[in-house]
Image (tube, rainbow, N blue to C red; front, side):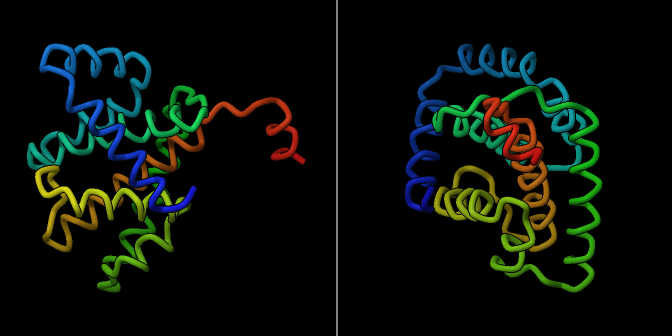
Length: 171
């Protein structure tokens, strides 16, 4: 999927979320918590590590990632705790290395990702939407992008593939 198509999809998904009133949004998040308890559990554990607006954005981004895959007719399974732990460990090591080098360049960050196009689309989209809480401070931005990368990678690893795709991947 091309970047413009991804951004259009993100705009549509965000628009759908923003149309919900507070009660419906809270119900949606509650239902989503049942669907993705480990993923949202991780985010809720990070509540004090991010300012409120950034934390809210990470929750919205998680919902948007899942809805985006569903909009592309992909079934998202539950992100399991072991998958999430492995991805988180790998990303912390990767981003710690980037931080130690002082390398906060957009191209470097996206190229280092397992999902460079998806991550680049999210960063570009949310940089365009000022009220969504994308941090400007380089270190906070790096931590934030790392969490986006974790969410995207863990969700992608939890996609439920049709049987013929599983056979191709296992071959």
